[in-house]
Length: 189
Length: 167
Image 1: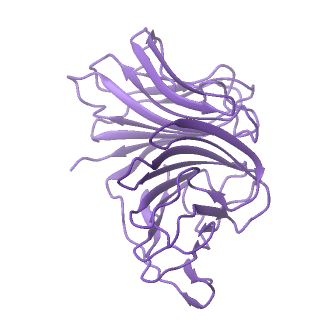
Image 2 (image 1 turned 90 degrees about the horizontal axis):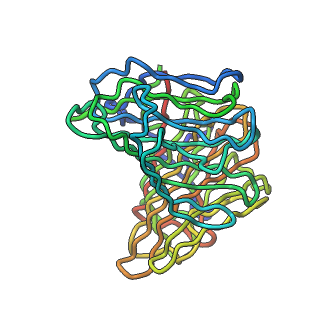
């Protein structure tokens, strides 16, 4: 078996060192889900309140081009969300804000793809706190090998002090069967 | 059974080195995260290559700020290794931090990779960027090479590859 890690110094000296450490005992997998090809919603429910923060990692294509994903908490579709984002496409850069809307955006603000996967990483701090509104931040990208690509990062506000026990990722149309979503919990000290 | 989030491999350079290679990457995880803290022996950019593939199957979309302006550009059909930074020359005195997330690295779809780099030289020049890379290959990622446009990574450069496993 070849060495797992090599450092090549101009080919003149060759050495490697390999070690494995347990880096993240406080980072735990809560649940994961896969697209069905016929549904446009992924639901994580009964989220335990035992963590300090949550991370949602998504990798998806949609059956129809141009479908933005949305994120809601606790099945709340009322207009108590706000969105802020910085984004760039091959055409322009933009900053954007929307208030009093019915969902947050975790990425692909200008639409998903049915061929190339969009990836997003969402972090939600203090999700179980019952005295503060919840803010999430996200980083997302979708490169289409062309100008319609997008890279973006931003935040979402859910103006509600309830603990988050459920989150839904939705899209118009359906998530393909190659789409995966995974929810992780990060423990506090 | 691998842990949910664990270091697969790590190195800290004790001599200047032109290439850092993570090979034979296990398929036991769902995602990979590479944390790379580096500086060079000259000002050229850090770069990476997947699966030792230097063909033009890569593309990327980036947004970057350099202390005076914000810009974004898409680059299509480009060859590996692809850059981690896009404007300001890399510093030779301070370290650059790049984080690369490869979600679904072993999947049978093309690979979308998220990159983040922070470069601060204690001057008005610097760079903060976010990048979406696309690697149009359906092969699992089993190798990552870190290189520079020219020159070597300097002593103290650190690279750690983590595996993340979903339920």
